[in-house]
Amino acid sequence: NRAQHDVIVIGGGPGGYAAALYGAGIGLDVGLIEKGTIGGTCLHVGCIPAKELLETAHVFRTVRDAADFGVNASPPELDWSVTMARKQRIVDQLVAGLGTLLEGRKVTVYDGVGSLGADRRVTVTGGDGSTATLTAPAVVIATGSLPRTIPGFEVDGRLVVTSDEVLSIDALPARAAVIGGGAIGCEFASMMGDLGVEVTVLEALPQILTGCDPDATRVVERSFKKRGITVRTGVTVHGHTPDPSGGFTTVAFGDGESVDVETVVVSVGRRPNPDLLGLEGTAVQLDERGFVEIDERCR
Image (cartoon, rainbow, N blue to C red; front, top):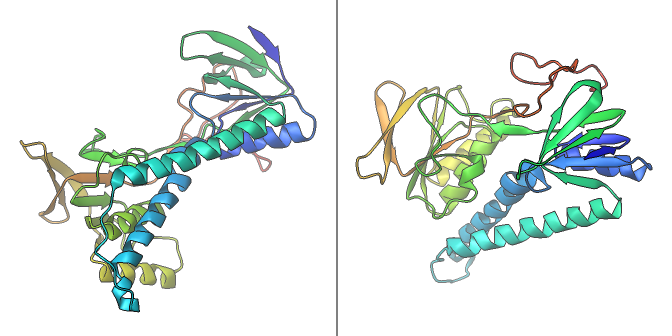
């Protein structure tokens, strides 16, 4: 199958679907390629579900501490399955809304992996192995990013998870180690700590939230301390040793220190996701970190 468009967008996340909608809004014939579900990281395993869980944690903490305000209530109990169902319901509503927007702007959505070849020719490979060839004068690469991992902490979705998996875990652990004290790591530490998880944040740099205003960082550090969240800065993690029972693992860090946890959340940033782009026969170049090299106009 072959199709011609004015613009082809590879990737249906916030960058990709926004580009598609803008293009269609000015009268261009746009083809949008997405291998999963429209919405990308932000909608499915990022901003939206994370904020929903943070709001759940806020409500839980408010009820738990209600007596401080003269409001007497029974100690709250968390039904994690209800929390997960609410999160998914919100995500599904937003996905449906995006689908309606794209359909209304007459954006053609292709379900599959888009690979860019010579002469701005894009091959779409569907999950069933079928292929389609698209061409356009302009191609927008919006393939997003993936969680970074670190040696010694292979992600298994159970003892070791990234931000992708932690937002859909079956149950909260009693104890968790968050490796990385950036914005994402601190979000998860805050959420889990408020919901009763014993949390230890392990950060290699001298402070958490590096790059943020120091005053804001100190506010977060004081808040974490007040809420019982342990923060260890300036420490290197060395690996982890699962217990034979499979119920927990021991994380080694610093100078001979360790902590036993049921879940390790690896939150050490994100990396570009050009892995399936192809790029054979094109002039597109990647730098040493995997980012697409661009000029001052993102070309």
